[in-house]
Length: 64
Image (cartoon, rainbow, N blue to C red; front, side, top):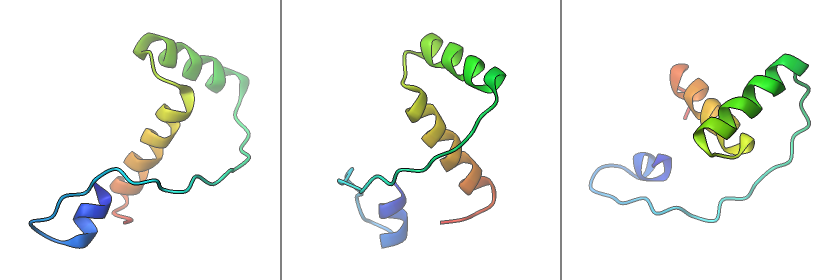
């Protein structure tokens, strides 16, 4: 979606093979427990939810 937006109007953005970058982060025990519970409820991986949250944060602050 972001690739299509950057390319301009009348374009289609297909999911590419975007390179993944490893980051080490620390979370509180309660955050991890709540994230795990949400992931199980939604039947999604925790990493997917974290990437979704990061996209929401970047959108909130209009960072493209």
